[in-house]
Length: 257
View 1 (cartoon, helix red, strand yellow):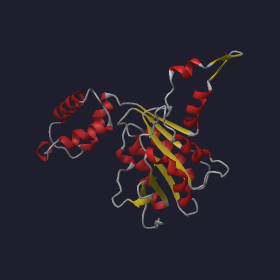
View 2: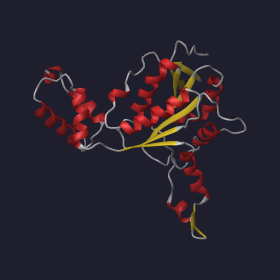
View 3: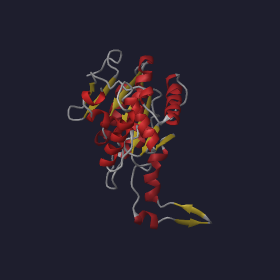
View 4: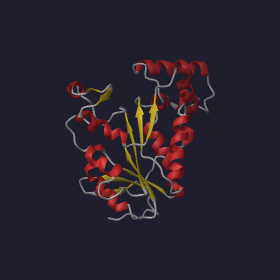
């Protein structure tokens, strides 16, 4: 089924039926909803803006601590530019072998596309990343001008390196030369021209995120912050935008009044 991209702004690849399912209820998160990652927002917005103008732009890898806004930033960037013709296609890691078919379906349309791969990483015995590499830099056919890949991951190097791989590396005339196995693995991350790193916020940044969600709260703000810190501690000390939102979701309407 060929989608009407004027009507549908986002789709998810469904491998079992091998088709793009249009998303009916798109997450409406905006750039102003994301706190503590201003530099990352600026860089990804700049890259996407160049892409929308038909200028050279990079595939992007957003990597770092869990819950720090990597996936949310990609969705917010999409929402920011979708009225200008940007479209989003989400592809699960297990479905990356279908990437060439997906790209074939969208390469000749008038719209511009972000292929979104969330929580991307590979185990040592997985080979799906080879399809991703071919789309990132092309094979005998160059990558389409209207497609970029934005991926999020907890790891900067998407394919793990083993101790045995490192033992095979060595110095040649004073320079470090990686073993072939490591070269193969780190070359995937190298194909992303834009790397954005994300780190857990400090306590003040975490509480600012809490305040953002509770901006209409009229109660004791100090008591609210104390409860938010206790909630974080109960989750192993995790401080992130995700934790702040979960704390907000856990509060009843009575608590917010």
